[in-house]
Length: 72
Image (cartoon, rainbow, N blue to C red; front, side):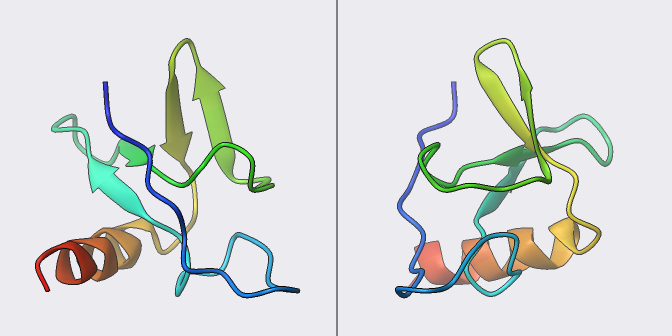
């Protein structure tokens, strides 16, 4: 299971904003985990069982942004 992280959203911001979303690779092609806190609303997050997946059109960019943030 993927650990969820808090997005760095500001008051008034809503997902899906590629700058505040967080995502991780699943290792299954273009399927991408959404790792933003479940409490934040997002129409592009898909719930399948215990996992949440991202369908944002820029999800690969979101992964790169997430990786850069986590490696700092």
